[in-house]
Length: 210
Image (cartoon, rainbow, N blue to C red; front, side, top):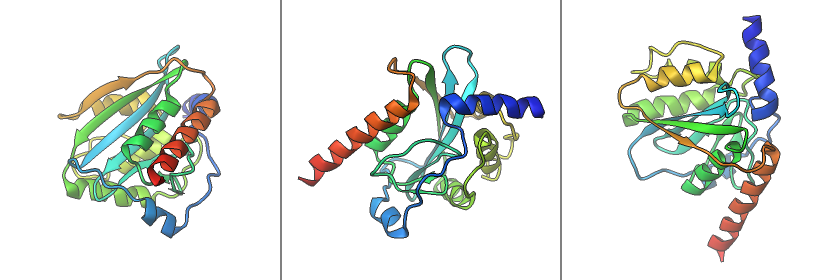
């Protein structure tokens, strides 16, 4: 267990699975930015993986049901147009989702994206669990996501793990999961990617309000 924690803490420094002090949104901000995708209810597991070693560096879960959010435990993502409460990102429009994966995908890491269609009831359970998790401690991104998933009916077979890739492998074995990869070859600097995507989202926001 000690070696597992050390491995996760090392991954923290390069991919953002660290205990973060993100600003906490007010309820009115969350309500005003709420977004519901018109498609079916889904769960999407993101796993950020090193292009050099193949090891996992961060885990998060997008939940699309009565609203679409990303449970980003101990994550680093921030954007002016995305309200954050504890470790839940709200208002995940298509543009925000693209910014999220683009911020993490870079020369040193790519995003494995695994999506499964679920019932509205399953999505709602996952959504409420995410909101109740509270802020997650650094290096517990995969662990907390696994704990969330195993409480959703139909996902009880998920075992608790500290390894993002091991969680991804388990998730990929569930019938109906569709797996893709998202890669970019830009700067390895996560903060630069976050800043650039924040700027793009602000530009889109300004253009839509004109």
